[in-house]
Image (cartoon, rainbow, N blue to C red):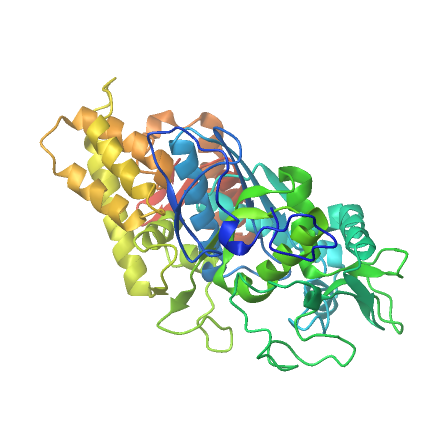
Length: 485
Protein backbone atom coordinates (compact mmCIF):
# COMPACT_ATOMS: atom_id res chain seq x y z
CA UNK A 1 0.00 0.00 0.00
CA UNK A 2 1.11 3.55 -0.59
CA UNK A 3 0.10 6.98 0.54
CA UNK A 4 -1.08 8.14 -2.87
CA UNK A 5 2.16 9.07 -4.63
CA UNK A 6 2.96 9.89 -8.24
CA UNK A 7 1.17 7.54 -10.68
CA UNK A 8 4.23 7.49 -12.92
CA UNK A 9 6.16 5.73 -10.18
CA UNK A 10 3.45 3.60 -8.60
CA UNK A 11 0.87 1.91 -10.77
CA UNK A 12 -1.91 1.69 -8.18
CA UNK A 13 -1.62 4.34 -5.49
CA UNK A 14 -4.04 3.76 -2.62
CA UNK A 15 -5.68 6.85 -1.06
CA UNK A 16 -5.38 7.45 2.67
CA UNK A 17 -9.03 6.53 3.23
CA UNK A 18 -8.35 3.02 1.89
CA UNK A 19 -5.00 2.34 3.59
CA UNK A 20 -6.46 0.06 6.23
CA UNK A 21 -9.30 -1.65 4.39
CA UNK A 22 -8.94 -5.37 3.83
CA UNK A 23 -5.93 -7.30 5.06
CA UNK A 24 -5.59 -10.49 7.04
CA UNK A 25 -8.25 -10.88 9.73
CA UNK A 26 -7.04 -12.75 12.78
CA UNK A 27 -9.60 -15.00 14.42
CA UNK A 28 -8.94 -14.26 18.08
CA UNK A 29 -11.43 -13.92 20.92
CA UNK A 30 -9.25 -11.35 22.67
CA UNK A 31 -9.86 -8.23 20.57
CA UNK A 32 -7.19 -5.53 20.88
CA UNK A 33 -7.86 -1.88 20.15
CA UNK A 34 -5.10 0.69 19.68
CA UNK A 35 -5.29 4.43 19.09
CA UNK A 36 -3.67 5.06 15.72
CA UNK A 37 -2.24 8.55 15.37
CA UNK A 38 -2.38 8.34 11.57
CA UNK A 39 -6.14 7.76 11.57
CA UNK A 40 -6.76 9.74 14.78
CA UNK A 41 -8.98 7.00 16.16
CA UNK A 42 -8.97 3.66 17.96
CA UNK A 43 -8.72 0.72 15.59
CA UNK A 44 -8.98 -3.03 16.07
CA UNK A 45 -5.51 -4.51 15.81
CA UNK A 46 -5.00 -6.81 12.82
CA UNK A 47 -1.49 -8.30 12.61
CA UNK A 48 0.40 -8.66 9.38
CA UNK A 49 1.19 -12.25 10.32
CA UNK A 50 -0.96 -14.54 12.45
CA UNK A 51 0.22 -14.65 16.07
CA UNK A 52 3.17 -12.33 15.50
CA UNK A 53 3.79 -8.61 16.07
CA UNK A 54 6.61 -6.43 14.76
CA UNK A 55 7.25 -3.23 16.75
CA UNK A 56 9.72 -0.44 16.03
CA UNK A 57 10.45 2.04 18.82
CA UNK A 58 12.35 5.29 18.35
CA UNK A 59 15.21 5.16 20.83
CA UNK A 60 17.47 7.70 22.51
CA UNK A 61 20.07 10.06 21.10
CA UNK A 62 22.97 9.01 23.29
CA UNK A 63 24.74 12.27 24.08
CA UNK A 64 23.31 13.17 27.50
CA UNK A 65 21.62 11.74 30.56
CA UNK A 66 18.03 10.69 29.78
CA UNK A 67 15.50 12.43 32.01
CA UNK A 68 12.42 10.76 33.45
CA UNK A 69 10.25 12.26 30.70
CA UNK A 70 12.35 10.45 28.09
CA UNK A 71 11.98 7.20 30.00
CA UNK A 72 8.19 7.38 29.98
CA UNK A 73 8.30 6.41 26.30
CA UNK A 74 10.06 3.13 27.05
CA UNK A 75 7.75 2.19 29.93
CA UNK A 76 4.87 2.74 27.48
CA UNK A 77 6.34 0.58 24.75
CA UNK A 78 7.23 -2.09 27.34
CA UNK A 79 3.58 -2.25 28.41
CA UNK A 80 2.62 -2.49 24.74
CA UNK A 81 4.97 -5.43 24.23
CA UNK A 82 3.83 -7.12 27.44
CA UNK A 83 0.18 -6.68 26.43
CA UNK A 84 0.78 -8.48 23.14
CA UNK A 85 2.68 -11.27 24.91
CA UNK A 86 -0.12 -11.51 27.51
CA UNK A 87 -2.42 -12.24 24.57
CA UNK A 88 -0.15 -14.95 23.23
CA UNK A 89 1.65 -13.04 20.47
CA UNK A 90 5.29 -13.53 19.63
CA UNK A 91 6.81 -10.03 19.59
CA UNK A 92 9.83 -8.83 17.66
CA UNK A 93 10.83 -5.37 18.85
CA UNK A 94 13.57 -3.09 17.56
CA UNK A 95 14.78 -0.03 19.48
CA UNK A 96 17.33 2.17 17.75
CA UNK A 97 20.21 4.08 19.30
CA UNK A 98 20.95 7.39 17.59
CA UNK A 99 24.70 7.80 17.95
CA UNK A 100 25.21 10.03 14.90
CA UNK A 101 23.31 12.49 12.73
CA UNK A 102 20.95 14.16 15.22
CA UNK A 103 21.68 17.85 14.79
CA UNK A 104 20.84 20.55 17.29
CA UNK A 105 18.31 22.13 14.90
CA UNK A 106 15.28 20.55 13.24
CA UNK A 107 16.30 22.58 10.20
CA UNK A 108 19.14 20.10 9.59
CA UNK A 109 21.56 22.77 10.73
CA UNK A 110 23.90 23.18 13.67
CA UNK A 111 26.35 20.73 15.14
CA UNK A 112 25.78 17.03 15.67
CA UNK A 113 24.71 16.57 19.32
CA UNK A 114 27.18 13.74 19.89
CA UNK A 115 30.13 15.59 18.34
CA UNK A 116 29.28 18.71 20.32
CA UNK A 117 29.21 16.81 23.62
CA UNK A 118 32.48 15.05 22.78
CA UNK A 119 34.17 18.40 22.18
CA UNK A 120 32.76 19.86 25.40
CA UNK A 121 33.96 16.93 27.50
CA UNK A 122 37.21 16.46 25.57
CA UNK A 123 36.41 12.83 24.91
CA UNK A 124 35.91 10.87 21.71
CA UNK A 125 32.43 10.65 20.18
CA UNK A 126 32.64 6.87 20.54
CA UNK A 127 33.34 7.16 24.27
CA UNK A 128 30.37 9.48 24.68
CA UNK A 129 27.96 7.17 22.86
CA UNK A 130 29.22 4.04 24.63
CA UNK A 131 28.79 5.65 28.04
CA UNK A 132 25.24 6.91 27.44
CA UNK A 133 24.16 3.75 25.62
CA UNK A 134 25.21 1.69 28.63
CA UNK A 135 23.42 4.13 30.92
CA UNK A 136 20.26 3.77 28.83
CA UNK A 137 20.47 -0.02 29.12
CA UNK A 138 20.87 0.31 32.88
CA UNK A 139 17.79 2.54 33.08
CA UNK A 140 15.79 -0.10 31.23
CA UNK A 141 16.88 -2.74 33.76
CA UNK A 142 16.04 -0.49 36.71
CA UNK A 143 12.53 0.15 35.36
CA UNK A 144 11.98 -3.56 34.63
CA UNK A 145 11.69 -2.83 30.92
CA UNK A 146 12.28 -5.96 28.90
CA UNK A 147 15.23 -5.95 26.54
CA UNK A 148 14.22 -5.41 22.90
CA UNK A 149 14.79 -8.22 20.44
CA UNK A 150 17.29 -5.94 18.72
CA UNK A 151 18.97 -2.77 20.00
CA UNK A 152 20.46 -1.26 16.83
CA UNK A 153 22.99 1.56 16.56
CA UNK A 154 22.89 4.00 13.67
CA UNK A 155 26.67 3.81 13.23
CA UNK A 156 26.42 0.04 12.69
CA UNK A 157 24.08 0.57 9.72
CA UNK A 158 25.72 3.24 7.58
CA UNK A 159 25.74 0.92 4.53
CA UNK A 160 21.99 0.36 4.80
CA UNK A 161 21.33 4.08 5.16
CA UNK A 162 23.43 4.97 2.12
CA UNK A 163 21.61 2.27 0.13
CA UNK A 164 18.23 3.76 1.09
CA UNK A 165 19.29 7.26 0.00
CA UNK A 166 20.59 5.85 -3.28
CA UNK A 167 17.24 4.15 -3.80
CA UNK A 168 15.42 7.46 -3.31
CA UNK A 169 17.90 9.16 -5.63
CA UNK A 170 17.17 6.69 -8.43
CA UNK A 171 13.44 7.34 -8.02
CA UNK A 172 14.04 11.07 -8.50
CA UNK A 173 13.13 12.28 -5.03
CA UNK A 174 16.44 13.87 -3.99
CA UNK A 175 18.49 16.93 -4.80
CA UNK A 176 21.91 18.13 -3.75
CA UNK A 177 22.86 21.39 -2.05
CA UNK A 178 26.17 22.71 -0.76
CA UNK A 179 25.63 21.05 2.63
CA UNK A 180 23.98 17.75 1.76
CA UNK A 181 21.45 15.61 -0.09
CA UNK A 182 17.79 16.47 0.56
CA UNK A 183 14.42 14.79 0.08
CA UNK A 184 12.02 16.78 -2.11
CA UNK A 185 8.71 16.68 -0.21
CA UNK A 186 6.83 18.63 -2.89
CA UNK A 187 6.67 15.44 -4.97
CA UNK A 188 4.41 13.75 -2.41
CA UNK A 189 0.76 14.71 -2.75
CA UNK A 190 -0.09 13.73 0.82
CA UNK A 191 3.15 14.51 2.66
CA UNK A 192 2.51 15.51 6.28
CA UNK A 193 -0.79 13.67 6.79
CA UNK A 194 0.40 12.06 10.04
CA UNK A 195 0.83 15.49 11.60
CA UNK A 196 -1.96 17.11 9.58
CA UNK A 197 0.52 19.71 8.32
CA UNK A 198 -0.85 22.64 6.35
CA UNK A 199 1.82 22.58 3.65
CA UNK A 200 0.21 25.22 1.41
CA UNK A 201 -0.14 27.63 4.30
CA UNK A 202 3.43 27.24 5.45
CA UNK A 203 6.03 29.90 4.82
CA UNK A 204 9.79 29.25 4.82
CA UNK A 205 11.05 29.36 8.36
CA UNK A 206 7.68 28.60 9.96
CA UNK A 207 8.32 24.91 10.56
CA UNK A 208 12.09 25.13 10.63
CA UNK A 209 14.73 27.79 10.18
CA UNK A 210 15.05 29.09 6.63
CA UNK A 211 17.68 27.48 4.43
CA UNK A 212 17.92 29.38 1.11
CA UNK A 213 19.05 26.26 -0.77
CA UNK A 214 16.08 24.15 0.27
CA UNK A 215 13.35 24.01 -2.36
CA UNK A 216 10.58 23.62 0.21
CA UNK A 217 10.43 24.41 3.94
CA UNK A 218 9.58 20.77 4.75
CA UNK A 219 12.46 19.19 2.77
CA UNK A 220 14.83 17.24 5.00
CA UNK A 221 18.43 16.02 4.88
CA UNK A 222 19.18 12.45 3.88
CA UNK A 223 22.97 12.87 3.88
CA UNK A 224 24.97 15.74 5.35
CA UNK A 225 28.43 16.73 4.16
CA UNK A 226 31.22 17.12 6.69
CA UNK A 227 32.26 20.77 7.18
CA UNK A 228 35.08 21.73 4.82
CA UNK A 229 37.05 23.46 7.55
CA UNK A 230 37.09 20.60 10.04
CA UNK A 231 37.22 16.84 10.25
CA UNK A 232 34.40 15.12 12.12
CA UNK A 233 35.05 12.14 14.37
CA UNK A 234 32.15 10.29 12.78
CA UNK A 235 32.09 10.51 8.99
CA UNK A 236 31.95 8.10 6.06
CA UNK A 237 32.59 8.06 2.33
CA UNK A 238 29.75 8.13 -0.16
CA UNK A 239 29.49 8.97 -3.86
CA UNK A 240 27.94 12.33 -2.87
CA UNK A 241 30.91 13.19 -0.65
CA UNK A 242 32.30 12.53 2.83
CA UNK A 243 29.65 12.99 5.48
CA UNK A 244 27.08 11.31 7.70
CA UNK A 245 23.41 10.29 7.46
CA UNK A 246 20.51 12.55 8.34
CA UNK A 247 18.66 11.74 11.54
CA UNK A 248 15.49 10.34 9.95
CA UNK A 249 17.17 7.86 7.60
CA UNK A 250 18.43 5.49 10.30
CA UNK A 251 14.97 4.51 11.54
CA UNK A 252 13.65 3.63 8.09
CA UNK A 253 16.79 1.69 7.16
CA UNK A 254 16.98 -0.31 10.39
CA UNK A 255 13.24 -0.95 10.68
CA UNK A 256 13.14 -2.36 7.17
CA UNK A 257 16.29 -4.43 7.67
CA UNK A 258 15.05 -6.21 10.78
CA UNK A 259 11.25 -6.04 10.48
CA UNK A 260 10.53 -5.83 6.76
CA UNK A 261 9.20 -3.09 4.52
CA UNK A 262 5.89 -2.96 6.42
CA UNK A 263 5.72 -3.25 10.20
CA UNK A 264 2.81 -3.65 12.59
CA UNK A 265 3.37 -0.86 15.13
CA UNK A 266 5.69 2.14 15.24
CA UNK A 267 6.01 3.99 18.55
CA UNK A 268 7.59 7.18 19.83
CA UNK A 269 6.90 10.45 21.63
CA UNK A 270 4.36 13.03 20.48
CA UNK A 271 7.30 15.30 19.64
CA UNK A 272 8.23 12.88 16.83
CA UNK A 273 4.94 13.36 14.97
CA UNK A 274 5.44 16.61 12.99
CA UNK A 275 8.95 16.00 11.68
CA UNK A 276 10.72 12.72 12.47
CA UNK A 277 7.87 10.28 11.93
CA UNK A 278 6.39 12.33 9.11
CA UNK A 279 9.72 12.08 7.30
CA UNK A 280 10.10 8.39 8.07
CA UNK A 281 6.79 7.75 6.31
CA UNK A 282 7.77 9.87 3.32
CA UNK A 283 11.15 8.26 2.65
CA UNK A 284 10.11 4.68 3.51
CA UNK A 285 6.94 4.57 1.45
CA UNK A 286 8.58 6.36 -1.45
CA UNK A 287 11.38 3.80 -1.50
CA UNK A 288 9.18 0.70 -1.24
CA UNK A 289 5.77 1.68 -2.58
CA UNK A 290 4.33 0.01 0.51
CA UNK A 291 2.71 1.17 3.72
CA UNK A 292 5.50 1.65 6.28
CA UNK A 293 3.61 1.07 9.55
CA UNK A 294 0.09 -0.19 10.11
CA UNK A 295 -0.34 1.58 13.45
CA UNK A 296 1.36 4.69 14.81
CA UNK A 297 1.30 5.14 18.59
CA UNK A 298 2.65 8.09 20.55
CA UNK A 299 3.20 8.73 24.25
CA UNK A 300 2.37 12.13 25.76
CA UNK A 301 4.76 14.43 27.60
CA UNK A 302 5.66 14.16 31.27
CA UNK A 303 5.71 17.58 32.91
CA UNK A 304 7.31 18.52 36.23
CA UNK A 305 5.33 20.70 38.63
CA UNK A 306 3.15 21.67 35.69
CA UNK A 307 5.99 22.81 33.44
CA UNK A 308 8.37 21.50 30.82
CA UNK A 309 11.50 19.76 32.08
CA UNK A 310 14.56 21.98 31.76
CA UNK A 311 18.04 22.08 33.26
CA UNK A 312 17.88 25.86 33.42
CA UNK A 313 14.71 25.66 35.55
CA UNK A 314 16.26 23.12 37.90
CA UNK A 315 13.52 20.54 37.28
CA UNK A 316 15.49 18.15 35.09
CA UNK A 317 15.40 14.81 36.88
CA UNK A 318 17.08 11.54 35.95
CA UNK A 319 16.27 8.07 37.22
CA UNK A 320 19.39 8.29 39.38
CA UNK A 321 17.93 11.40 41.05
CA UNK A 322 14.92 9.29 42.01
CA UNK A 323 17.12 6.51 43.39
CA UNK A 324 19.31 8.98 45.29
CA UNK A 325 16.21 10.26 47.10
CA UNK A 326 15.47 6.73 48.27
CA UNK A 327 12.76 5.78 45.81
CA UNK A 328 12.35 2.43 44.13
CA UNK A 329 12.46 2.98 40.33
CA UNK A 330 9.40 0.73 40.04
CA UNK A 331 7.48 3.29 42.10
CA UNK A 332 8.06 5.67 39.21
CA UNK A 333 6.84 2.96 36.84
CA UNK A 334 3.72 2.55 39.01
CA UNK A 335 3.12 6.30 38.90
CA UNK A 336 3.31 6.29 35.10
CA UNK A 337 0.77 3.46 34.87
CA UNK A 338 -1.80 5.43 36.87
CA UNK A 339 -2.34 7.56 33.76
CA UNK A 340 -3.06 6.64 30.15
CA UNK A 341 0.10 6.74 28.00
CA UNK A 342 -1.65 9.16 25.64
CA UNK A 343 -2.52 11.65 28.38
CA UNK A 344 -0.19 14.24 29.83
CA UNK A 345 1.11 13.43 33.32
CA UNK A 346 2.50 15.86 35.88
CA UNK A 347 5.36 14.62 38.04
CA UNK A 348 5.86 15.88 41.59
CA UNK A 349 7.84 14.40 44.46
CA UNK A 350 4.60 14.15 46.43
CA UNK A 351 2.99 12.07 43.68
CA UNK A 352 6.03 9.78 43.56
CA UNK A 353 5.97 9.47 47.34
CA UNK A 354 2.32 8.42 47.16
CA UNK A 355 3.08 5.91 44.41
CA UNK A 356 5.90 4.34 46.44
CA UNK A 357 3.75 3.97 49.56
CA UNK A 358 0.91 2.48 47.53
CA UNK A 359 3.13 0.01 45.68
CA UNK A 360 4.90 -1.02 48.89
CA UNK A 361 1.57 -1.60 50.61
CA UNK A 362 0.38 -3.77 47.72
CA UNK A 363 3.58 -5.81 47.69
CA UNK A 364 3.46 -6.37 51.45
CA UNK A 365 -0.07 -7.72 51.25
CA UNK A 366 0.80 -10.08 48.43
CA UNK A 367 3.97 -11.20 50.23
CA UNK A 368 1.93 -12.40 53.22
CA UNK A 369 -0.28 -14.62 51.06
CA UNK A 370 0.60 -18.30 50.96
CA UNK A 371 2.41 -19.83 48.00
CA UNK A 372 0.52 -22.87 46.68
CA UNK A 373 -0.19 -24.48 43.36
CA UNK A 374 -3.46 -22.59 43.03
CA UNK A 375 -4.72 -21.54 39.61
CA UNK A 376 -5.37 -17.86 38.83
CA UNK A 377 -8.94 -16.60 38.71
CA UNK A 378 -9.96 -16.61 35.04
CA UNK A 379 -12.72 -14.04 35.48
CA UNK A 380 -10.25 -11.53 36.92
CA UNK A 381 -7.75 -12.27 34.15
CA UNK A 382 -10.49 -11.76 31.58
CA UNK A 383 -11.49 -8.40 33.05
CA UNK A 384 -7.85 -7.33 33.23
CA UNK A 385 -7.32 -8.34 29.61
CA UNK A 386 -10.34 -6.29 28.51
CA UNK A 387 -8.76 -3.21 30.14
CA UNK A 388 -5.19 -3.67 28.92
CA UNK A 389 -6.42 -4.60 25.43
CA UNK A 390 -8.42 -1.38 25.24
CA UNK A 391 -5.57 0.87 24.14
CA UNK A 392 -3.48 -0.01 27.21
CA UNK A 393 -5.88 1.28 29.83
CA UNK A 394 -3.47 0.90 32.74
CA UNK A 395 -5.45 3.12 35.17
CA UNK A 396 -8.34 0.64 35.05
CA UNK A 397 -5.90 -2.25 35.28
CA UNK A 398 -4.32 -0.74 38.42
CA UNK A 399 -7.77 -0.16 39.94
CA UNK A 400 -8.58 -3.83 39.32
CA UNK A 401 -5.52 -4.85 41.36
CA UNK A 402 -6.87 -3.14 44.43
CA UNK A 403 -10.37 -4.44 43.86
CA UNK A 404 -8.92 -7.96 43.69
CA UNK A 405 -7.15 -7.48 47.03
CA UNK A 406 -10.54 -7.02 48.71
CA UNK A 407 -12.30 -9.96 47.06
CA UNK A 408 -13.50 -12.85 49.23
CA UNK A 409 -11.50 -15.53 47.43
CA UNK A 410 -8.58 -17.53 48.78
CA UNK A 411 -5.29 -15.68 49.14
CA UNK A 412 -3.59 -18.50 47.25
CA UNK A 413 -5.80 -17.83 44.21
CA UNK A 414 -5.19 -14.10 44.59
CA UNK A 415 -1.43 -14.60 44.62
CA UNK A 416 -1.53 -16.83 41.55
CA UNK A 417 -3.71 -14.23 39.82
CA UNK A 418 -1.36 -11.36 40.69
CA UNK A 419 1.59 -13.36 39.38
CA UNK A 420 -0.14 -13.51 35.98
CA UNK A 421 -1.24 -9.87 36.01
CA UNK A 422 2.27 -8.68 36.82
CA UNK A 423 3.54 -10.31 33.63
CA UNK A 424 1.70 -7.51 31.84
CA UNK A 425 2.47 -4.71 34.33
CA UNK A 426 6.07 -5.46 35.39
CA UNK A 427 5.74 -3.92 38.85
CA UNK A 428 7.62 -6.59 40.80
CA UNK A 429 4.49 -7.53 42.77
CA UNK A 430 5.67 -11.02 43.68
CA UNK A 431 8.65 -10.43 45.93
CA UNK A 432 11.42 -12.99 46.44
CA UNK A 433 12.07 -14.22 49.97
CA UNK A 434 15.49 -13.51 51.45
CA UNK A 435 16.28 -17.25 51.53
CA UNK A 436 15.86 -17.46 47.74
CA UNK A 437 18.71 -15.02 47.02
CA UNK A 438 21.85 -16.78 45.68
CA UNK A 439 25.03 -16.73 47.73
CA UNK A 440 26.91 -14.87 44.98
CA UNK A 441 24.42 -12.02 45.27
CA UNK A 442 24.68 -11.98 49.06
CA UNK A 443 28.48 -11.68 48.78
CA UNK A 444 28.09 -8.62 46.53
CA UNK A 445 25.74 -7.01 49.07
CA UNK A 446 28.28 -7.55 51.87
CA UNK A 447 31.05 -6.17 49.66
CA UNK A 448 29.01 -3.05 48.91
CA UNK A 449 28.27 -2.51 52.62
CA UNK A 450 32.00 -2.67 53.39
CA UNK A 451 32.80 -0.15 50.64
CA UNK A 452 30.12 2.23 51.93
CA UNK A 453 31.57 2.05 55.46
CA UNK A 454 34.95 2.98 53.98
CA UNK A 455 33.18 5.82 52.09
CA UNK A 456 34.32 4.44 48.74
CA UNK A 457 31.13 5.65 47.11
CA UNK A 458 32.14 5.20 43.47
CA UNK A 459 33.22 1.59 44.01
CA UNK A 460 30.07 0.88 46.01
CA UNK A 461 27.95 2.31 43.21
CA UNK A 462 29.65 -0.01 40.71
CA UNK A 463 28.61 -2.97 42.86
CA UNK A 464 25.04 -1.65 42.93
CA UNK A 465 25.03 -1.44 39.14
CA UNK A 466 26.35 -5.00 38.95
CA UNK A 467 23.55 -6.19 41.23
CA UNK A 468 20.92 -4.45 39.11
CA UNK A 469 22.40 -5.92 35.93
CA UNK A 470 21.77 -9.38 37.45
CA UNK A 471 18.17 -8.51 38.25
CA UNK A 472 18.41 -7.45 41.92
CA UNK A 473 17.56 -4.13 43.47
CA UNK A 474 19.18 -2.92 46.70
CA UNK A 475 17.46 -0.58 49.12
CA UNK A 476 19.36 1.20 51.90
CA UNK A 477 17.51 1.50 55.21
CA UNK A 478 18.44 2.47 58.79
CA UNK A 479 18.65 -1.23 59.61
CA UNK A 480 20.99 -1.93 56.67
CA UNK A 481 20.69 -2.91 53.05
CA UNK A 482 17.73 -4.94 51.77
CA UNK A 483 17.99 -6.87 48.51
CA UNK A 484 15.03 -7.72 46.28
CA UNK A 485 14.72 -9.42 42.94
